Length: 476
Image 1 (tube, one colour):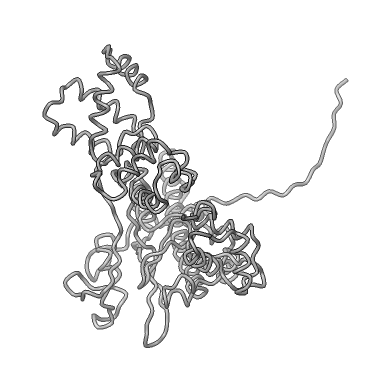
Image 2 (spheres, one colour; image 1 turned 45 degrees about the horizontal axis):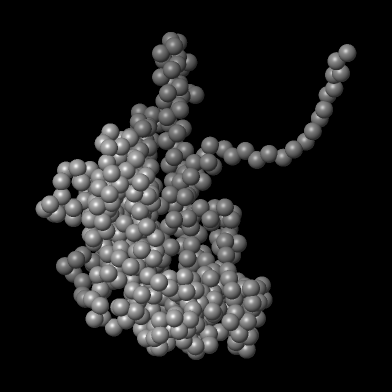
């Protein structure tokens, strides 16, 4: 017999309204992305239109970024020098332009060099495309010559010997940058050393060290190398200094900015200016959006209209109502976004006032998301979205908003992490290289200066600075 039961349970569940989801999405967008979103919405929704400026007969999208920024000032006399055009600034003025890097890809760079080789055949050029295609971003060959030979046989149906493929590989290894198409770090360094004149101080010994004592070199056992080579420790150090000038990742020197997100252009979202006379900071939101409104033919109240009789009329009325509501919602969310961005950035500017005045990273106060949430009155998630992927321009340069956050090591300590990092770096730079400081010694030195810090924190900060342990810093 089937048992029928009625269970009652209670649970909490948060459901976000569509306007809240749209608001959260727009908050994460930077200036370029939000402008593109506005354009897309204008194209998709006929109920949404720009408000034309009758004074100049144009809209915000037709003005340049410089014109938009200069419009903030009442007269030309009020415009700071670095905000003026290219023909109206002095040599010491600072201009904030998007940083962009465009370059040739590693593949194209190598193939262009091969095209300049007179005695290369079409068959060898085909082989070269396979070999170069198997180079990673660092310029190393990721597959064996035998495997590449098999790949060519399968893809092109050409039966080649490994020696013919190896011949083309050696041609590529002779190209620039030096060290390209190496199979490992040792091979890469030897390729570069092979192009250095042996009369260069330390060149011959450097080649011997990498060729015969690479394991000892990687472990920094320089006295052992000196003993095995019969050279003095000074001569070994001279050779090591030469090796340090080589590039362990030659492929990184060539590449397209589109392949590396770190090289993509940066456009600041905010500008913080400091007035020496009034000693005040001012904040400007650099990307301006056009004024939007509901198109007149859609701006009607369908609830007061006569009840449509036909199906087509009902569908038309529904279409008008839906599009009008979407347009009103989008306009509302845009206003909310702009207000939120200004409020959060104002809180950051006030909190880090000394930094924006001086530009000194050590002037950054301890600041976490919770601090700005309390200062601005917004939720932690809102602050996180506002600061994600956005930048602020100052007199000293352009900074990501995330870089302005600086954790407090302890609740009772007003020293920021940057202060400790800077002092740790100084201690290591000033240490005796023949007897470098251990993490315990650094901890003791910092405590003597009033920094109450644990040894594991010192190790963590040292790793953040990409500084190796004491044994690997030792010089003989």
